[in-house]
Amino acid sequence: MIMDRNALNAFLDSDFAEVAQMFRVDAAQDNALTLRLLPSPAHLRPGGTVSGPTLFALADVAVYLTILSMIGPKALTVTTNAGMDFMRKPPAGVDLLCETRLLKLGRVLAVGDALIYAEGNQRPVARASMTYSIPPEG
Image (cartoon, rainbow, N blue to C red; front, side, top):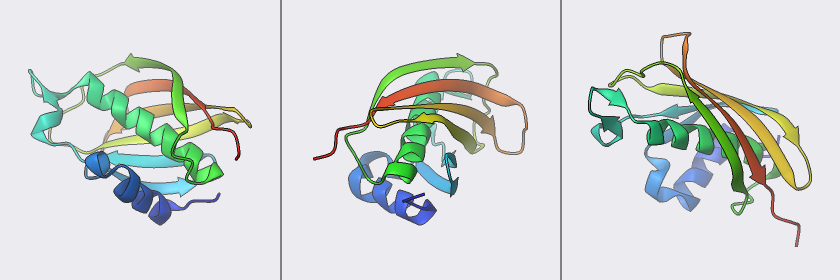
């Protein structure tokens, strides 16, 4: 692992300041990470639930940071494919946790899975499969 929890949070603050206040890396280890979403009223949709786009952003940022933890701060790593299943209504006012694992980390492509939970509940609210393109060296 090249970037630990503190380095990933610092990277968010410096390179993605516009969304850094939404997220916090709680844990990082080889090929896995836990990212916390700190929800605000802006993340809610009618019916008092966290919106789908917010859940997608959580999964996308979490897998992205998992990749960077292994390859270093290559900010131009980009999402090339994503699939998401929304399984349960996430409650408002509760932090959401996204647990990731890398399935493949190649020279050019990385593939990861993400499970999103409401804090304190073991039943996932969403699942995502994400693929990223890693920029060439040089």
